[in-house]
Length: 372
Ligand code: 1CP
Image (cartoon, rainbow, N blue to C red; front, top):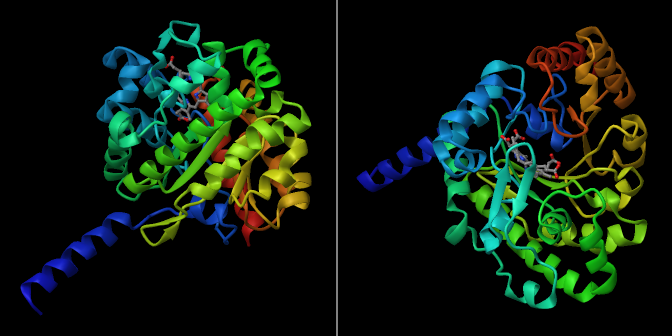
């Protein structure tokens, strides 16, 4: 062998070594392949309910300082995995609002009040002025965090990348922060639908670039969070939310490092729309607790895997009650592959970390019987 060939072979082996996953049951379940037990991770698993997270946030200075510093982002991503060894996936520590921030809307967080924007987007001229975000130019701190986390995970579990859906991002951009009544964003949708479509298209193109950049940097599955799709009417959901998630699914890199990169769509409150969501060609649907998972499986289980769906508030119950709820969700889904256990939405900040432990351990202990 020539030296060049030896070197090439050597670096190839390093790449293979680096990408060897020690635990791939999460990726397998998303593709409905057999696993030894139901994999589990939790939405918002790195967050305020963990004292170690609160300490890191204090060290970093602020929430955005955590997100923009790859070492801090990596530190908090790994915290739940160290505390709960049965977790089967890591999720990038970042936020969906990085994209509007990169569109120069000026994201900031006021203590106890959630996210806010200095500028809002309400007119045709505002939408015209919005750039399509180039991740390499504006969001390299996110892709740097992805590569740092992948290196530190060293194949322990797969890493999930994510973004918000165009509709959900638009709600924050038009309202200027969180909202209960969606007055301005729905007003825009019903009074200037073309302007709304133009905005959603710019967001969809930005999200495609963003998620593909995360995948190239090492994200092994991606999830699109459509937290606010469920506030739309049946027709408006298809036209203003799902259509743009479809555009994203069509534009994503679906294979990397010799493996499929599964795509998970999560719309909160979308129990009635599972069939049309599955038709986008995604690999899995995240479902909230208002849908029975066994029923969802009968409807779309041939097409996609299902992720969910315990009510996060069950974690306020006793460990025994939590275990009972886990058992009933496992029983409802039934035997065979295709479920990723999760909460139906993010873990609340006031949950006792010991209750999260009881939850994760219950899934690890009770699920093997469904995979014989
Ligand atoms: O005070 C703090 O430390 C900030 C709290 C916080 C955290 C921990 C925010 C602000 N974002 C995050 C991290 C985060 N956000 C993650 C990574 C952590 C993990 O999962 O382990 C993810 C995936 C998100 C996604 C996100 N941000 C969503 C979609 C998922 C969901 O929860 O519905 C949404 C809607 C946001 C916006 C946002 N960012 C932060 C808050 C408090 C909110 C929600 C505001 C609202 O309810 O409108």
